[in-house]
Image 1: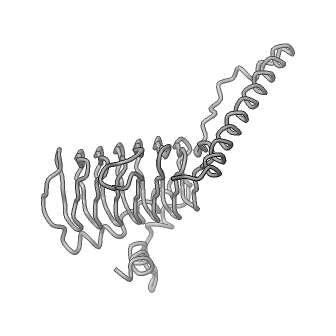
Image 2: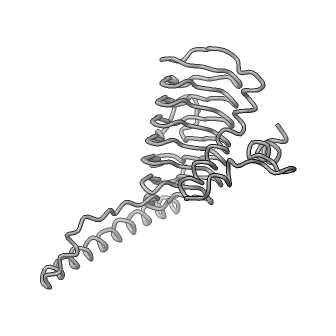
Length: 253
């Protein structure tokens, strides 16, 4: 049970947040009124007030040298590790429990990630996404655990309490039911999902570098870096992106 001091601090932080918002909105209203008196119409221009990261009371997103698309939204206790990529129109809502995203993971366009307040049987109610995970566009992810090197196909849904183990592959437009366990190194698909086949060793190795390679290539294009920097011919002795990632980050696998 939480102590009275902790509860008081939480209440105080929320009061401060709401009072601060009142003052901000009041200040904006006064600015608009003064502009009307001066016949200044600048305030009537349609400008976006969108923010990539938005605090929620006393918690705010933590982004550690990752790339966030300009129109993505990270709300509440979202923790994004280095070299992860959050693409366009992604919405991550960590209002009730944390959302954690590991190194080199890629969250595709239009994906929504949400957390539940609590789950039965002691299942994690946060969202935990491991390293080098690829989530294709337009997926829906609820309170679940997604281990390292997992691939989730386009338009898939992962429900509360599900766990997808390391290196598993979820086919496009699949639905992972609540509490479902997908074993490591297997391909599952369908609605609801069912076992399809085991991944070969070559496919497992390819999963290790997919997210890193895609992120580097797409980011180079978005940042207007020359594509040759990423995909040009290698000089003798140079490592490709795949070999570099495998050697540096997956040597202990």
